[in-house]
Image (cartoon, rainbow, N blue to C red; front, side, top):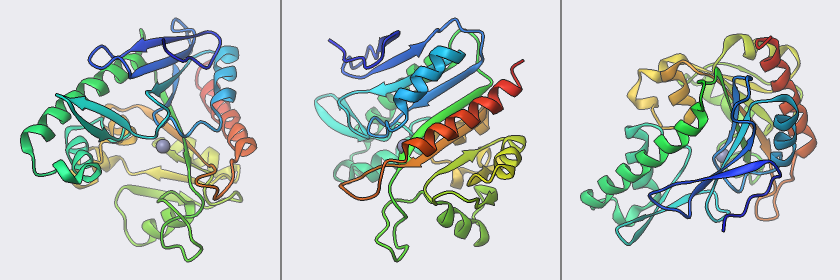
Length: 273
Ligand SMILES: [Zn+2]
């Protein structure tokens, strides 16, 4: 019944709503303590490549799936409510994002609370799979973003771009502690939590952002994303962002993202010997 894309993968079905499931690629008993995770189903540019690398090099790759869309639709007592699977890892993030994505129910406290509870259950289901048998030391998130950024004067879309992060950083945004604009397209970048990883990526000329560890204690920076959760739990976290086609705009940066994945493996293997 579930549509698995990869050989050597298995489905873990979310018991509370069986049309949501995790596709798990690789050996869940692998001794390698890293896990790759793709929370947004439309952001699949490098999925095939990551699946192959994980089968070759160890660790697992987990893809959250429902029906091919970026957001997950929860069925809350018959009402369909959208949630962002990368805004579900903290209570504060869940509430904010549920209200933002579903303005028509934002004032219905009981429904928002019920949705928040189901989203929390889903986040625990995902985290249990990410944690596996032995808690991984590194979480690698795979994402794709749109060309440019909102109000960049070039018809850009979205909010991920090294130029935008640089502007945020220089105007005092507290969730960043360092930014390096290397020699790649503005949309191809790493978002990291580990200073050593940041310095290594910077040295190689990658675009890279280092998250401020204070996001773990600052409620105003708690957006419920996996990067904030990772900081709270002390995980080494790397987000691999690359451009994709969106509504015929932009392009899929597959070759750059595969190089980025290779570089991540070099960082992971260096500390896993
Ligand atoms: Zn994403």
